[in-house]
Length: 205
Ligand SMILES: [Fe+2]
Image (tube, rainbow, N blue to C red; front, top):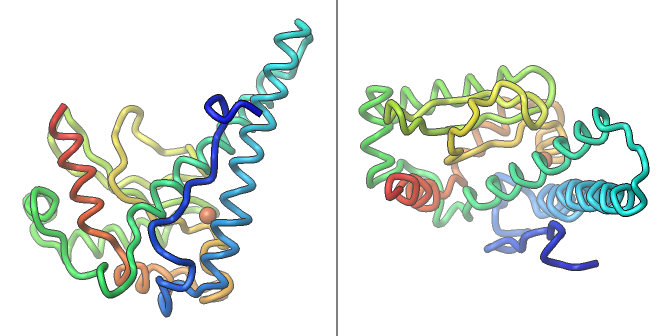
């Protein structure tokens, strides 16, 4: 397999045990090495299927293939964002500083108001999906999105700054079916520096 033409599971910048007690070693291990890996494998298998069909000039079911591809690539990209906006509790949590802190305070009135709206958004995603903080360059407003599955309810072109995975596979080992408890715990392991860096990068362009 040519590595640069296919997706690769990203390495984490912390160990599997480092997000405990908010996300246990077992939960994070399975989530990263099984669930995320499955999206990477799934996307690569579809790309290989497309390569083969194109080489042989064979017909494929384009609609279902593209739907599968979107599901898998969306899963891969969202999980990659998710790992990057988490940090061990000794380094994470608290409140954001910098341009992100200013942008959230300006848009929502206070960090606490943002946190409440984001938690409510994540808690009320229908079925499996994600809560996401995004940013609109046309209005210079941070915007909260609910992502159903991996790709519904997304504003096209809006860059995502932070996500929380609310698929049950993200929390069932630690919190059973209690999504709300997982969302509460999430705030202790948010890597605000990383989220702020994403916004700073975005604002440079
Ligand atoms: Fe996940």
